[in-house]
Length: 530
Image 1 (cartoon, helix red, strand yellow):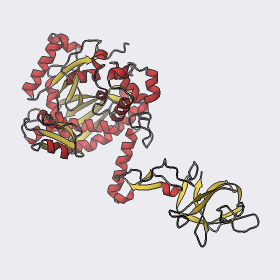
Image 2 (cartoon, rainbow, N blue to C red):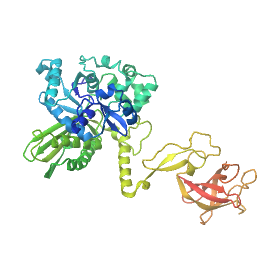
Image 3 (cartoon, rainbow, N blue to C red):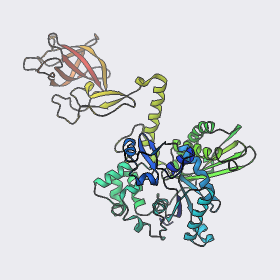
């Protein structure tokens, strides 16, 4: 099979979140409007942009530039619900409509273009169709592959077959960071390396890209070259991967559908993962109580996660159940079927629990981090905000002072730079277990006398036996140190001496011993090594 992507037509409704918000609020599309998330602009209208409002801008700055700005909040369900009539209007003329995200649909162009007299005629017909049926403006682009076709739609361009790489080459490298792709850090890294255009990135050797940026970089590199998003050896999904569910009574409310979608999405994703697959095109098919058949296919740039599947099912139900009278089904949904229209190898989804390295590169474990975050927030909701802590590694000399516990959701910035010299800091590795309250210990030499420190801050004798928390003494097989730590002001409070000791036993155990105190120095066990 050729590595040349399928020729695709993309229909794009510019600034769709802002357009949908205005439609839902019954506001005219002419006043300047913007949609905000976390007090930052995620979408704005043409009139708002003409006043200086830009994506990513803070709300205060946006309103300072445009005092008459109409403010809306994000609502994915609203955006999907109001976009369903657009997809339906396109489907009246062309079969195989796939929703990429609210505001963007893709269709295979070859058959439809032949039927309607060419790609240009088809594009003009679709623009008129959407304008007359839904009353919104749209732009159309045609190119080889979804990525190139999307960028072509942003510019209302029909790219010749086989010319996607030449079309992409002069475009800015930031075009890689499309919605739902999370390539912001990859793009930032590429810019800092001096790669400012897609063409410059495409010229790199694939082997070098993989070794430096991992599989996420490889996918972006293929896109920049105008190739298929993934290698063409895609597997046909086994029929048993389809998941269906009957509903009695039928589903007629979006909240009930959203609850059901989470369970069904988990089953669907687990079935795919068991076969080493991930879904890139999701078919959502429903049958109503009166036999009406509803169907929609969602195309995704990245393999779908369980949350991504659940979101798309919820969005689709919003579009079906909250459509205008005459377009919505006449009864509730009695049967739902999720079908993997297209799958790829799911290696990138075999992730650890916590994110590591640069987000979007290397291990690609953003999904697991997101799941863990939702679980921690749920626990906080049950037990209170001070019930869940995560650790932040700060600077310091001892293991206890280097680890700072922060309530989940609070600022995790470093207070003390770990890269500072920190005289007296223990060498790596750190103890595996650090006690919240150090255990008292007694350290003696071979004559049974307590081991202390001299004025020169050396041990009075090598440690021979250690008794921990009143237990029987254990012989010291080996030891290292001492490491001296002065107090904040001279030898005041905070001064201590640390040694590492390997104690005999079944099994042997390595401990971190600390001698602290001015008038009556006391040994304690601060931590235990694995």
